[in-house]
Amino acid sequence: MLRNMIAAALLSAGFVQHAAAAIVTVAGDTTGGPTFIRPGDVGEDPYPWLTGMAYRAFDIVTSAGPNEFNWENSLMTSCDFGCVTFLYAGPFDPEHARKNLMSFDTDGYNFSAMQTFLEPGKHYTYVVTGYFDQDAGAFSITAGGQGGISISAVPEPSAGLMLLGGLAAIGALARRRASDTAQRS
Image (cartoon, rainbow, N blue to C red; front, side):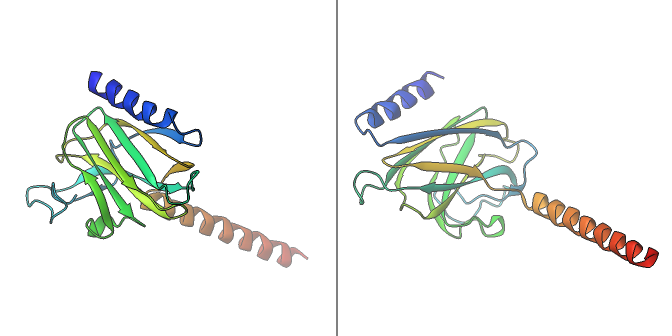
């Protein structure tokens, strides 16, 4: 807890000197989330003993700061479990967890931090997951940079399928009602 407070204070102090800096915090929980087999501790192939960790993915987009070449951003994650984080340049594919991998922090403690350069306007994916298969729980991400920064949750694949199914059912119902109305006329 003390380590998290010190890190947050240092991050905040670094941004005080920049008037245009933005800091955003989001919270979530990996419990019951979709799973994937994460890359190894230094970005290599996954370890054979890992079978699948619950994760949450977030889309990150930044905007330019006071200097057009000032792209430095910080991402800090505090977890109630042994967590690791991965940053992808573009989309995240859980079937190919090393594709687009840009940066990672795999210390496996309750805190993850990375400082990296994010090009304004480009989409990045930030993934929070456990160090071991059973590691899951609540987390909080604090992100900041010289310009604006937005973080939004990436919907789970099952949510998209449910949405498509619901839209198909509504379309079928509307078509049936239109057919019934035409027969009555």
